[in-house]
Image (tube, rainbow, N blue to C red; front, side):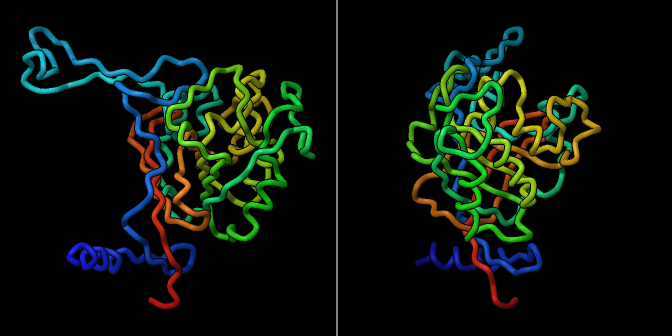
Length: 286
């Protein structure tokens, strides 16, 4: 009873105005980041070394209380792009360095969560490119249009894609470079730009084909870069972000949520991240 009362008080406090509407937000959100455990099972992409942790050793100090240290102090080694849930920015594909820390706005707001079933490229009207294969599984423009038509609305800027089948094994899946994985077609990426999606979350290791000759076409389209360009100055969507390797449990239904995309202040083109989806409802009055 006390917990229910406390929850009701919190809900009274979490009323915000977004996109010209008033919303009531449930503070008890759904975590969609994969827990990164340096000592346990973890997802891995492109053959990178797993994330690890080691006690700090400095002179006579040992950062491990189990071996006599006064406290625990670990050195973490992680490749954000490959070791779990991460958010990346246009600096991922440009010569001039640009970090996620420079994107300071738009990381909270109303998001749409939609589930999609990738289809074989041979059954799609979308092109796969010179490095693609007709056996590839695509999230095509048509698939996105169908999935988003009843959920997406003008003013939203964030989209979460849950690919089906949604197996729990995604939390620790290994994605070698030569393993076929679903990815976004160029047409799908163009649709996202057209609809105004600026913050995209996917449960894929990459929105592009893992072996695509270095084109990263969907990435470039999403950031407003011409094909093959590595010039930061030519990117028209520098404030856009892509979050890969999330996991959205089946218990979280498709619909609109308040997205809280939590990012550390690290000057890098990709950082480990923690997106949280909070259930919400539109309010008819303040």
